[in-house]
Amino acid sequence: MQQSKRESDVRTTESDAGAESLDFIRQIVTDDVARGAKVATRFPPEPNGYLHIGHAKSIVLNFGIAEEFGGTCNLRFDDTNPTTEEVEYVDSIKEDVRWLGYDWGEREYFASDYFDKLHELAVQMIRDGKAYVCELSKEEAAEFKGDYYRPGRESPYRARSVEENLALFERMRRGELDEGAAVLRAKIDMQAPNMNLRDPPMVRVIKRPHHRTGDTWCIYPTYDWTHGQSDAFEGITHSLCTLEFEDHRPLYDWFLDQLALPARPRQIEFARLNVSYTVLSKRRLITLVREGHVDGWDDPRMPTLCGLRRRGYPPEAIRKFCERVGIAKSEGVVDVALLEHAVREHLNETAPRVMAVLDPLKVVITNYPEGEEEEFEAPYHPQDPSYGSRKVPFSRELYIERDDFREVAPRKWHRLSPGAEVRLRYACLIRCVDVIKGDDGEIKELHCTWDPESRGGKSPDGRRVRGTSHWVSANHAVPATVRLYDRLFNTPNPTAGGADLTASLNPDSLEVRQGMMEPSLRSAAPGSRWQFERLGYFTVDSANSRPDKPVFNRTVTLRDSWARIERRNS
Image (tube, rainbow, N blue to C red; front, side):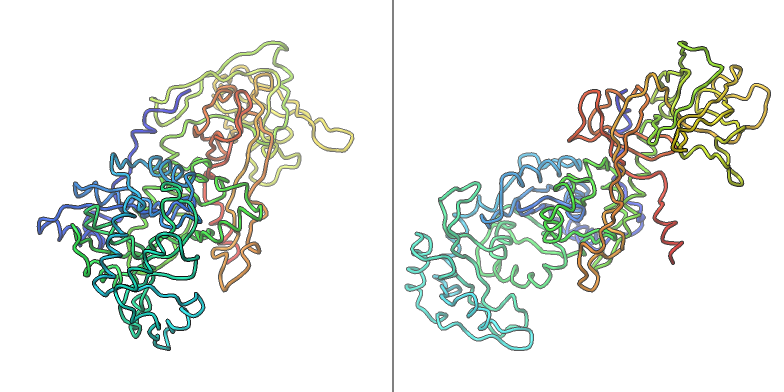
């Protein structure tokens, strides 16, 4: 069964925060547009890692602003450090942005596109007496820079002549100076309270090939020197950055003030996304991968977009989540339950319903003729007939969930127990008449009888049967591996107070079971999403599934079980 067309039709671009008030960024853009400005934004990832849920907020904001105000949004890779950047990351970033639903058209750029221009501007800065080549070692430079309590001191190389600086900079470009031997610095103010204005580095020697320019360059611009000028080259009007760049804004503006550039972009900062039970630090994510706590960057427990995609999170739900979180000026932590709720909400509308048994217990219908079978009609979505239906085979031997049976039933137990009657979803009523155990005392199978007059699950005489169980026919069941993923950490802030990251790892974040599926799932497409009735939402794993050997990842439970755990522990 193909996923319903509504899967692609459901768009969640409207904000639940309320249309009455604009966030502060949209208010700024609205005012600028009223003055005649055209809107041009950009999403500027560094291709040195995989995007995560935090980046999704910036993607949704930048592309969203452009769409809302009739502007454009560029995708620009700030590839200024060849020691950490790879084509693999470039490709994964493009895949992630497209998966979220955005298209940058022909507006794909790289900071490396501007290396020649940036070099010319650096030479101009030297000629204007606004930059110099400094030969302090890394340790000496840190000492001269001072700190927040101690003003900096001017480098002994700061007073070099323009001619000397030009000659040394040319030697840097030719590769005649070793890495760390010299750096081009902006000549600003070593007494400035803002540390970023204390003669920041602009260009440094890195003798590594670049993933795009090869061995053309052995000097590379810094991020601070590159970013504002790249924005200006592209005609960006609103350069939206997270709060850690707020202290860099005076430097961003200073560089723009010194140069004759085709545009004057405006940098605006917003609070980055922090999510409970999650870490988004690249350094900590690398630790999880390298130490084998997860199975790679696309592990479905990871907050990377490729991990969330493999787990089955719909891009529409991630966009909705980012819109609901909104844009703020101060840092905060968003409850991951809000993200899970957005996923549940979307899948409730778009995921077809099927039956699967994750911990099978055999049921033998003793009064059903041996060798016979029949089919029952079952809708894919009870609330939406457009999803259609399928035929579910029924036979003498079935599987139900082991948890749906109790030999000694507790009070208010509405599932199967000796002598009790339950409804098999879409099929019929059955009553347990015998419990068969093995030599070890474990229950091997149940013997039940069925009421042939109850076909379709209806009570023929109006008797009340409160319990309903899902099931699959043993003769037709499709064996499948099911991975029950849960939150990777069991504390809201895994690194609070500098705590060891691994101390908060959830030992139950992955449980692997061998389940039985209804036959309609035999050829389920990788990446397709389903609701296993009464069990949760699941996705066919895109990495490990094979024809006739599906692997399902639990995307999210039907309800927020963690909320109950937290209430119980509070």
